Image (cartoon, rainbow, N blue to C red; front, top):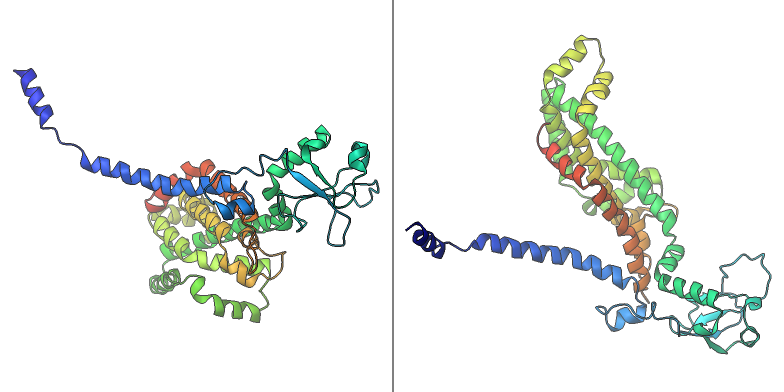
Length: 370
């Protein structure tokens, strides 16, 4: 009897439609999130021609390069050798006939003394194939060809200096936001200035409604008037100002949940305001501080518009602007741009995987006390 009733119950068991729908939505979300990253990764190893003809195909030309043809060219004023100018040994200048031919985009300078006589005596206009070169030169050129987009975008775009600028903006801007927001949160939540605190809270809340895009023109005019355009200090100050409203709201709510007795005990023991702040409030506010720091680092690292407008020289531009620099009115180096985009995104991905637990804990810690 029990067995039969079990069968009847099994027949009437409902299919978990909600769970199925949630899994389908989650799978679609993962695909929409991950596929662009995968596409960007393999497309960064493709030439401009491959990306133009078929953007969804897998890379081939940069990998299958052993039979690539090269043309011997003569030294010209627009050719900047990548070897030491003090090295006066005779060299052969060869240009790829496959990638950017006649645009002087892929050039190599093998020493004539390392080449067989029939190659060393070639004249401008003559052709050769990569597999005709000595093995060590073959392997070097073949390997550098695979990573051609990355090396060219890194050198021609000056991405090293721009990455350092992005790092400086992210670190110093986030540190300023964390420190100032904790100070304001401490004052607004634990100091006895109710009316003034209400006015400041309202002002901070209004500031949260303003973003850089909506005030970029008056902001630029104001920075020009005080001489802060095209300076690192000016960029960091703007990032700090626009990051403070959300940070102040988080720190105020978090610090308000801390026991008032901690602050009162510190004052009774003779501690001043600054000592109480740094020795009691800051250590106990690490969760919300971590939340603010992480999200501001990521936001500032990826920010584009502000630096594009206020930074006019290469010394102050950030990495996203360097990625954009490969787009022009007449032509766009898609391969270089995707490679630069990959290099700009890689630190963010690594940062997330390293600090994913801290991000989750920080979000929870910023929302509830403890």
